[in-house]
Image (cartoon, rainbow, N blue to C red):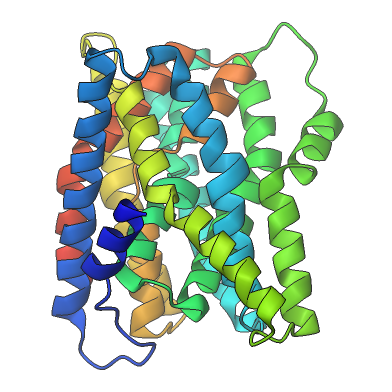
Length: 338
């Protein structure tokens, strides 16, 4: 409970939905969240070196993120507030930014004459970021327990990123990967639909539509359980990343890394800002969109690339490298955006 109490007090200063000039407060919260994240990642690396946490346990922490903490956050965020259809505008804006970046990555990667399997990995990790893991953690820390903001973040991440990745992303990976096994899109879609993340998304939307009374004791107890579970997201994400970090040889990935870093950490958030202005989004929503677009390459994108025959070594190396670079890029983007 100590960890949850520290997080609650540290990020208690949360801005309201009104655009009332809380830019400095949001930036300060962003920097605070990164300090906490770095401390937890460092703890994971230190515990790994002492063999307190084994290297092979990275998969356990990753599953706890996707099957425990993330579904709890999704359901808790969606179930407490009525869903406004306008919230899907953020999802569309983020999807559009990702789609444009992936097309640009394909064009430039083809011009660079990257190998087919490498190009598939580059396209996926250049466009798809850690919106549902690291992004949720950072925004949860910035905005605290604000259900309205977090419901927008969840819809944006799941509808604008995860759903296209598990459909269009699988098709891209299978096309460039040339996997030896036949790709069954139907089975992949069914597996996605049955995942705890999607189940939590559907249940949360249903609870929101029904309008469950939040003052009922049973609902309050459930929310308390889910809140504690969702508060573990930052810890679990940080430990997953810490267990994944390894020394990287830049010889083979120099050009792909340069391309992916520029597109993912610079072009995509700037493009998201342009799209937000074109759609005349409120300042708060624009800030959220830009920060989510600025997240480093997503672990799920690397997993999809490896699963369907793209270059797994390149995908994982780019994933770790973009995260390391994002420790500088995200605070800079946050300073500009907030």
